[in-house]
Length: 286
Ligand code: EPU
Image (cartoon, rainbow, N blue to C red; front, side, top):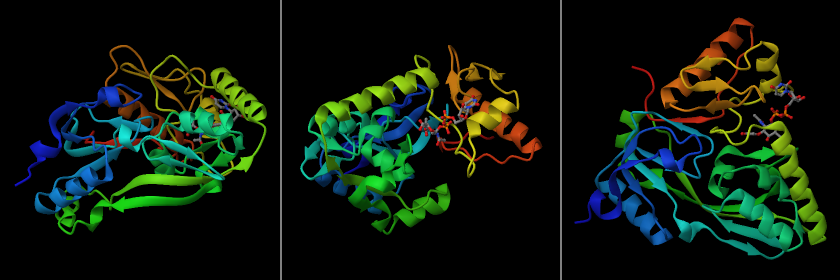
C-alpha cells in the first residue's frame, strides 16, 4: 500500500521555498512533476487524510517558525512551461516574470505586468495577482484546476485544521494581442525600472503585506500614520514603501507576524481596518 513516505519527503525545511526565507518545516513536502503524481496524492489523502497547503513560489506567504504539521504540495518543474499561440498558455508552476518575457519576446502583448510579480501562474490565479493597472481577471481565459477536496475524506482533515476546500491550479490560458516584440520588451523594462525605484529590493520581503482599502493605498495610509521604520525584532516596516515589511538579519517569522499585527492594531486605532494580503501558513498564536 502507498504511504506518505512513498510520495513525499518527511520534515522538510520550507524557508528556502519562500521569499522571506523564514519559517519551519513541513511534516511532508510533495513535489509532483506530473498530473498523474498529483492524482496519486489526492488518492492517498482520501485514505490517510492530512492538512494540506499548496505552495507556489512563496512570494506572498509567511510560514510559522513552528512549520506546518501537514502536507505541503509544491508543483515541480513539469508544471513550468509556456506555449504561445493566439492565446498564451502556461503551467501552474511557471514564474510570472518568465511568462511575461516569453510572451513579449514572441510579440504578444497583455501580460507584461506579470514581470513585476515574483509569483507563479497558480499563485496569480489564487490571489488574482496584478500590478500597474492590470490584474489576472483581465487576462485569464480558462484554467484547469484539480479539486483536492473531491477526496471525500479530506473533510476529516479540514474539520480539524480549519483548511477550506483546496484547489490546485494545473494550467491557465491568457488572452493576448499581437504586437511589436520591441514595444513589449520596452514596456517590460519600464515596469522593472518602476519597481526598482518604488519598491524595496535586496531585502527579504513578500511584496505588499496588506490589501489596499477600496480607493486608497495601504502604503500611503501606514506612511501617513508615521509607521515607516517601525521594528519588531528583526522585522521592519520598509522605509521605502510602508506596505512592505522587510526581514533583516536574525528575523523570525514570528517577528514579521507580530509586526503585521502591530501595524494592523495601530491603524485600527485610527479607524482604518487593514486586511493582510500575505497568506499565513502554520500557527503563530499560542
Ligand atoms: N505611498 C506613500 N507612502 C508609502 C508607499 C506608498 O505615500 O510608503 C503612496 C505612493 O506615493 C502612491 C500611493 O501611495 O501615491 C500608491 O503606492 P504604489 O504606487 O506603490 O502602489 P500600491 O497601491 O502601494 C499596488 C500593489 C503592488 C503593485 C503596485 C504597482 C497592492 C496591495 N499592491 O501597490 O502589488 O506592485 O500597486 O502596481 O495592491 C503586491 O501585491 O505584493 C504588490 C507589490
